[in-house]
Length: 449
Image (cartoon, rainbow, N blue to C red; front, side):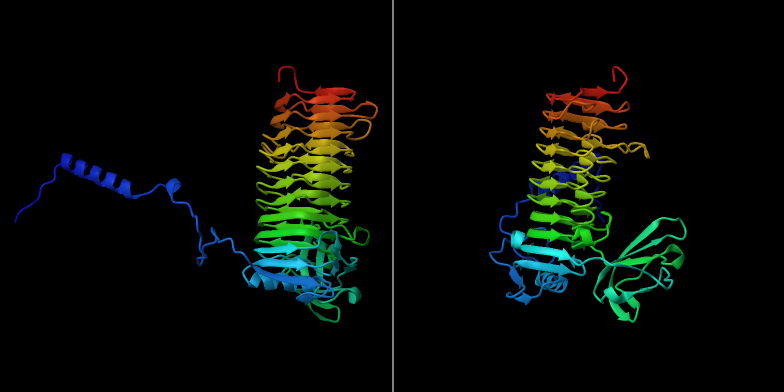
């Protein structure tokens, strides 16, 4: 029997040769060939051919593929198009009055006819519950169900029996016997009479959860504010999204909602472009908690409570070329962990209290709006007699504020151009024009900070 001997030097040489050979056949990811001519391949959502035609369905009140004027026809249309793998729902002129939200599926385009396509809602009604419902129940009992129908969207509210907080539950009424209604899902909260539970026919006009790749264009949304109760922007709005990605809104008007115009929570890569959000009770555009890379561009945000409200943990966003006027509190408000955002070339006019507010949030180790850039904006006539154009509060740090035009065309009074709090740090001010204020810059930081 013969035996082949392999000494250490021979082994290392052979191993090195194998390594070189292996490296020659493994192509780095960065050098993979580009996908130039994609094909529709089962399960491959990363690349899709640019088809010349996709499915289109038309809704109208007198003509179209589907005829109607409420949420049922709109919902039927978007669901049908989604079943076809995506496409366009074209909504012809008319006013469509909703009794429930339109729930948006993935991969659709909802295209209206501009100002002539109005999606609104009926007046809200609030009634008390007359029976206890436990957290595992899927039904409620109403004191006076006269105004409620099967299919209605509702919000249930109650005082939590354990901690005193207000619980908010969004549901749809799906069945009825007398004053008892079945819900589309279980409660998961206790609706005990001790908490004074109520049921209200209020909801977002357009809404979605866990969907992506949707385009909404040329629509007018009217929330019928005078006849509806307020719905907090963490639960609703003219448009309300939760855990969605890659939504585009173009030429959408969202007005008169007793809440927010546009609200999206934990939603990524949302584009709000050339939209008009006005005369809403709360926020014009609300990039909600955890939303990454929002882009708000070319919009008019007027006569809301706040024009743009960067919520918690909104990062890598851009707001540019927006006209933000006459908002009752702040033109722009940014705060809790909202970092690495840019606000550029916006007009922030006639804000009720402050033009741009960097909020104070001392509840955590470093919850401030750090590493943000404010550049090339025009901010004028902010607040009352002691109004402030740019107010930097708390331990906010690492801001770049440059090339902005801050104007006060009224009497100077006690008005301030830029106010910097005593704990703020590393605030770069460069080439800002500040005119007409009692004080151009008030810096409360210790000398040398």
